[in-house]
Length: 105
Image 1 (cartoon, rainbow, N blue to C red):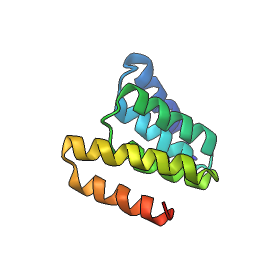
Image 2 (image 1 turned 45 degrees about the vertical axis):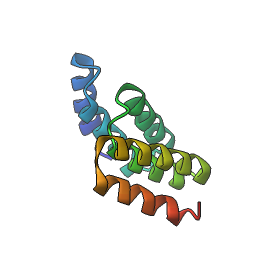
Image 3 (image 1 turned 60 degrees about the horizontal axis):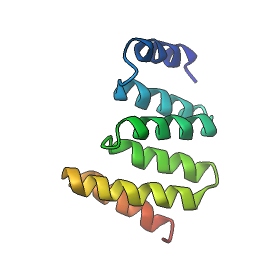
């Protein structure tokens, strides 16, 4: 894990708490470091602040899968599919549908 990268993006958040990209980077860094609870929390916080940040549904779902919560992952994927459809992101929608199908849901 690159703690300095997390710290760098946390500094961005201190200046701009609604910086969705900074929240996404932090969540991804936690995920890479296998700090799954923190990754899930960071993805959830990002989506609470910006529910249209479609990529967070996919990667947040993957974090939940890795954390042993396939039901939570499925719920996040379903939510993401609805958002991707609403915002017109067909590529993200297809990825989310594939991830959901991979759960057997």
